[in-house]
Image (cartoon, rainbow, N blue to C red; front, side, top):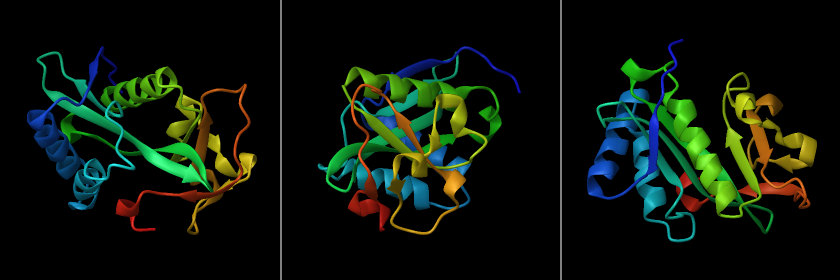
Length: 172
């Protein structure tokens, strides 16, 4: 793995939207994730203006992407992390980690409390994620326990227990 220094910044305009779509179309086998990002962007209840982050290559080309959107644990607001994607030629260079860290830092700065992710059990713990079941949080579908994870951003606040309610675009 080659790690380099990445510049991160929030999404800012149509050129970034096109770049994010390209990154997702390149990183995944089909258009599902790219279409999901577009649908979430159009959902006023899910989309947060500060929550879509890019990691740029030294030449300014967007290479990595991370998105946080509004979800709930029962009726308590939380954030869902994903999709996250990196151009295939830039994978294993730290671009994805840089975008995710920037998104999580923005969530902390915005006063958010809880981030949930459905993802690789070996990848997300590096950011502090642990199984959501430890907090009594469960997804609305069957998934291996180690893949549904939570990150508490403010340990001084109580963590809600219950079932995750995703934005409608997720289709669950």
